[in-house]
Amino acid sequence: MRACLVWILAGCLSVHAQVDVEWVTVGDAGNPPDKMGFGAVVYEFQIMKHEVTCGQYAAFLNAVAATDPLGLYISNMDGTPMPKGQDDIRTQQGCLMRTGEKGSYHYAVVPGHERKPIVHVDFLRALRFANWMHHGGGKGDTETGAYDIAKLGAMATRTPVATVWLPNENEWHKAAYHDPQHGGYWRFATRSDDVPESAKPDAKRVNAANFFWTKGLAVTQNAYHAGGVIYLTDVGSYPASPSYYGTLDQSGNVWEWTEGIIYETKRVIRGGGFASEANAMRASTRCNASPAKFYSETGFRLARAMPKGGGQ
Image (cartoon, rainbow, N blue to C red; front, side):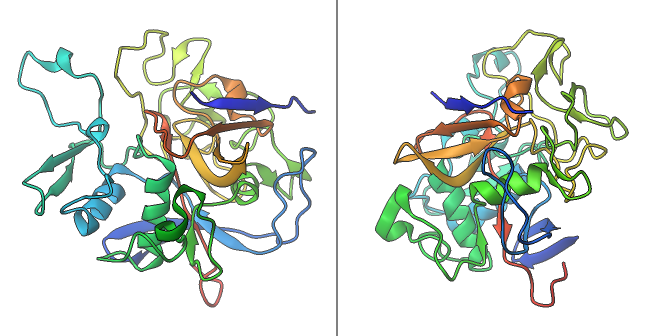
């Protein structure tokens, strides 16, 4: 189970082979922390505008998981359409399809799910994706680079040579809630102190997110939650509700892994998901999970060093 600690206080670039990523710059280096002590970052960096998608993860799998000894794909990710009349026997609703035999596995995205965030990702799968990106994608190594997983496993920390990484808690927190024009930090990553609206995707709706609220689930607008169904929205479905730096969905849709360590071995996850209530999305909420755990509403996004010249 996830555990939470809550304090109540008043340019698109294809730099990595096979994966297109849109990055935003988090500037204002040297900003102070918030009242909880989070968000101070002394350097500029970039972070993914969106969560890692099913399409991006499928590209990763096709590059490195023809045999898949590391279990980068698991059955919970499977979304292969069921034969007519057998839809009710599925216990999970994934977004990927794996075909072929071990040694020649091929991965495809269920049509219509290309821009859904990848879920059922444990902490090590997120680190391995980061290592792959650090090496430029393609057939890049998943076990060393940004993180020395080969030596340290789930306790791996960012190496000095990392160029792409999982954001630490201060980086994630700053990208989500900091706003120098506001004079500090917002309560929600939608650039608001007011609770967002749990709404169906709407390109013009301000301060909206995919989470569980008074009317129930954002996608269905009712409280009924069918077993095994994952009520995700495409990344960027609320473009009028960005953070100050331009990230989307840091409030709601999926919880996101960070590098943060708590209780010696657990990792901090932030932001809330489609089945979370509003308190989970507050800047004052920190949740955590065992690195080996994975959930139907937990994904991730990556950060990276500023490109040479400071551009996109």
